[in-house]
Image (tube, rainbow, N blue to C red; front, side, top):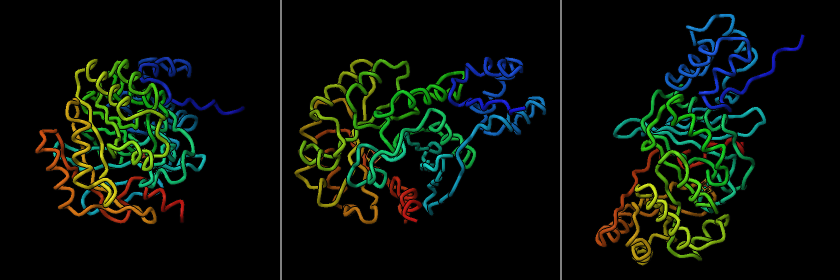
Length: 345
Ligand code: SF4
């Protein structure tokens, strides 16, 4: 007799789990119990769900393991950040990151394997897009991080890939985390970062959850921005900012501008003034991120004094801005670096 087919539970919204359990001949309420174990308690194996019958747990463990990815490597940085290198059954890999924060942990997950945006300074962008992640594969990163590091306070969708280029699976995964039947995470605790491909911001404005949105800008100059980010959608910074302003008008929530500071590239006083001119009347907060160098990409991090001067230019012009404290500043610190090293062998 052939074994029962695998049910990809994480591909379904937790409110559908009772129906999935019923289709297996189990009780619908047992599906509710299982969803609670996974999303509320952070359990990712059927064996641990002790209030389900042992036979059911054994059957599910055999036929439908919750996690298909393997934890290939865990890297703990001396400053408290942790990176997990996860390997999916087809050999594709991704990184999931946990960082300590003032109110608890922040976790960072990705939405694609590789990245079509190809930022010239990023380890994940060097080879372009390998493939999109599914809803389940995006969620597996959260479950692994919870299993390895415990609960978290904030979730940022800023890891490998751009969620705007894989929007539907990303929003489906976030619904499993935000909705009451899932993790019931408050929308204010979630930030999604994107270069804003066409239609992304309007889709987010019409989405049911009012999460924080960050726009990756990195330069106020069209020319330099396109040089740094070859995979950008073909439209101007002003058009993109117009959409961000419409998003603010709709949901009343200020957006974030992400600006990676690259030594000798976009960190001059003039660049700071140009950025201030561009954003002066916008409803945004500017997050300056001193670069974490990646071997062989030819970019370096500006000295602390240069980062401080850049920040001061913005602040003296009354813009809301902060300089991000970099965590994981060691050999594997930069986004995608751990995976890149594993690929290079
Ligand atoms: S920085 Fe983000 S958007 Fe740019 S290549 Fe890396 S993963 Fe993609």
